Image 1 (cartoon, helix red, strand yellow):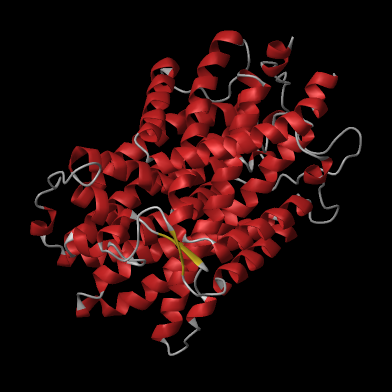
Image 2 (cartoon, helix red, strand yellow):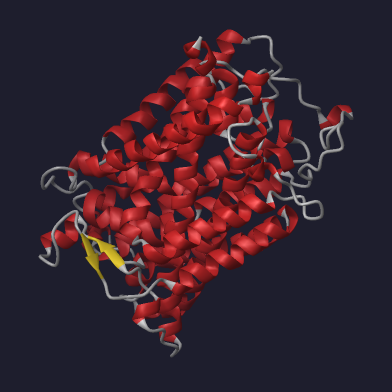
Length: 500
């Protein structure tokens, strides 16, 4: 009986179709629900807002300098391939089940409640850590920009009070690998302020949030295209030789390093899951969701490969291991000096939109889990005026701000990819299962060669998870055990599916 309950799936009910004039908004009981105002254009912009940020402005340089070298371009191809397989599966689900729960909702409908809880809990890890990680990166770029214009913030208010000793820092002899080191700082004030400001915007409404996101995305994409166009003129092809540097042991360079780089830069692709969390606020989800998910994937992958090619061509890859690799590369060319300020502003703006989309996505996943009874009703409260999950938004912003204030970026960043990859692999598996168990369901978008695409998606995502360091696995295990306690203590007993 217990096993049957854990594998229970939520029924898939037909969803109203806009083109047929069917109602898709509101509730027969008069319940306050989300407002359907987004279009395909909004979704593509949300994808670009979430994906083009930390990957380009923070992580690309570190992954190239420490793991992949010029082959970071291949790392993006590998990560993009894994994401493309998952994106096709996401598009089929999002058009068929336009719910705000994203991978959690899809898993609940196909693989059962227990695995759905695991995926939903993994997404909590993804979004909270992502928002905090990017807020710390935003703080670094903002402090650098303020320094360049003569405004200096005290170090005690711009760093976390503790730091995590990475492999590179240990090799330099500054600390012992895996240990936490006190920095003497109080907390990271800029990171707290940006989370608070973005959280307030998410509280006010989805229309305002998506409009601000679209404006900022347009500006940062324009700057990135200028970087590729003008930076390409100063590329030295000798910096790409050897394209795949000789392996120095473990995952430092070689093919192993390239694959490790792919698992790191996968952090950049977490935005595709965030696009699907807005499905319940899309005017015509059957048509617009696949366009938003797949369109933003193609554009983002091309931009990432172009930027990584220019960066590793401008300077030797070993010099990119900084908190601001794009600026580091530009500083070597006085003729590109005019781009430096533009890039710093684009980085600040770009990281802001990533935080925005993360803080939009997490409360909506909480909302879906709460509507199913797996979390308290607190999380499914919708503001009567703004039509947003306001209580969940406030809580998520508070926790993200606390983590960004106190924890270092080295500890936060890499763990995020694990939650994303687990969710992607589960969606790829779920779409294949539903094709077998419910072949009669109407699918506005069908993933081509679904069994091949789904299998490749599962293998690619789990393969990238498998090569991650032991510390990441420990964090995921501890987080899963914590989630299991929450599920046993509350979710299992309050599940609405079981009550019915």
